[in-house]
Image (cartoon, rainbow, N blue to C red; front, side, top):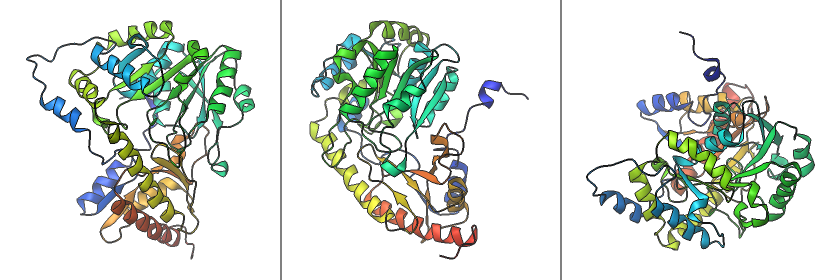
Length: 402
């Protein structure tokens, strides 16, 4: 049967589309080390789990479309700890950060309007844009300068009458770059000049390393009419499956318009909002310990990856990902080879080919996104598997003798 043209234009997730190969490997008894997906092995705060266990209502009923008051008030207190002044009326709870991004596109854009985005970018944004019939216009960042923000002039070149905004992720998924106050202010001035929005996904806010400070887009009240923050509980509290996110903006017209979408999907998940509210009561040490753990994991994996001949990777300053340049002809072919044809001491590695993290065709073909969300023992074995797998792939497939 013929499927819609709309769905035919969507790409399969480069993070998940190789799952059949990993399942086949696991059925053969091979231990697959998953570096392809940002699923931490960190424990969810006990406060959140206890709240789920203690959920004692007789009916799991419909909730408030914009999110429960207790959760929104909890977020107000959370942001205040970072010197960010927002009210509960500036917050809409969503079904994960994913729904928040989709709501923003559908609220701000008509079909064939445009958003500018630095690439590589979080690949699922392409699907959310397609659903809203929004065109993404890329500005390419490069591994040569650690994926720093391209010049403001490069962004301005892509602005036209269809442009509705610029979208960032900071700390960045997939590159680990953390945008500075100066970079954000430069983009905000550009947005003011052209009367467009700046949307920033800040779900990795706490995860900055080497003493790098984080600047929230909410810390610029003078630009509040054109600032939208995307947030989520998934990574901060290791609650990826709970699907609780938020849109935060002081622009009431944006939230009132997005509420029409929120009302159509009725409400965010009820039990998960209870868990999220409780997670906000976790001690500050929880997040700081998690941040320190990820910094250690980053150091372990990067140091070993940098020893592999032909591999090039920069030191990410935030989040828990980096993009690596591989000495292969095609990163996806190599990823499949690792799952289908290679193992070392009963183990292999699953990576996310980076081509799907670019808008521009052909870019990222020899790159992969790596997530360092597993314990150090797994990461050390993963690096060893990759080193041996690369050597075998270059010999067996590319017929190169190292």
